[in-house]
Image (tube, rainbow, N blue to C red; front, side):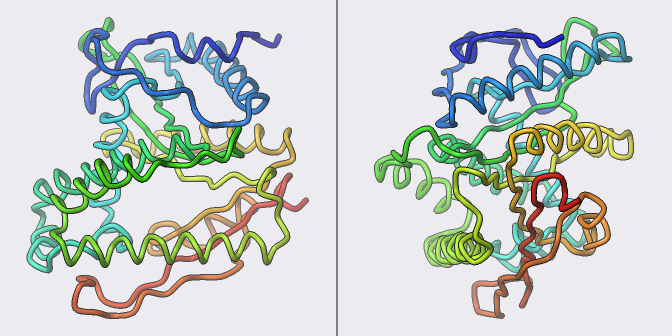
Length: 304
C-alpha cells in the first residue's frame, strides 16, 4: 500500500533529535523546504513512510526522516563529524593544524570534532539550496522509550526545483564564519579552494559521463554512531535509497576519501564503478600529505 501525503507536510514540526537523545520538540528555527524537484520529494517522503511502517514493530521502532529544524541538523552534523574524524578521513582532517591531527591519532578527537562540526553544520545548511536533504535514522531510547536517539545521519543532493542556489550573504555570513573559527584565515582559504576544485572535478566527471543533471543524485553514505556500527543500519537505508533511485532512473555520484575503510569492493557490490579521482598534493596547509578522492558513479539498476 502506498502512503500518500502532500509535500507541504514537510513544513510540519516533528520530534527533534540531538546527537545522543532527542529532547522534546522546541522552538528551534525550521529549515526551509528542500530545493528539490517536487515529484522526487513527494516520492521520497512516501518511500520513508513505507519504510517506517514496515519497521514500526522492530526493536526500537526505527524511523527515517528528513531533518527539519536546526536542532535536528546540528544532531546530524555532530554525528557525521564524529564518524569522519574517528575514521581519520583525510578529506576532513587535511585542513586542521598538524598538532590537531597528531592529537586525533593519539586518541584525542574531541577538539577537532567540535571545530569541524561548525563546518559540517554550515555545509548541511548550504546544501538545502542545491537540492540537498539531511537524513536521520532514529530509534527509541531503551532507557526512556519516550525519547528517540539518532543512530545514523547522511546528506545527499537531488535534482533541484529551481536554480536559485546559495546566496552570497549566506555563504559569507555562515560559511566564512564557520571556516575561520575552525581553520583560521589561511587554512580556511586553502580549504575553500580545495572544496571548489573537488566540486568542479565532480561536475566535469558528470558531464564527461553524459549524465543529465536532472537525472543525477550526489549521494553520501550514511554515517552510523559508533555504538551502532555493524548492526546493519547503513545497509538497510542504502537498499531503500537504491530502490528509490532505480525507480526514478537516477544516477548516483559519490566521492570517497577513505579507501582504507570503503574500498572499491564495497562500492562495486552496490553497482558503483570508479570513473576518476581528484588528487590533493602536499602543501604547507595540508596536514595529512598528498591524498586522492575517488569519484564513482552508479547507473540506474546498478548497470545490470
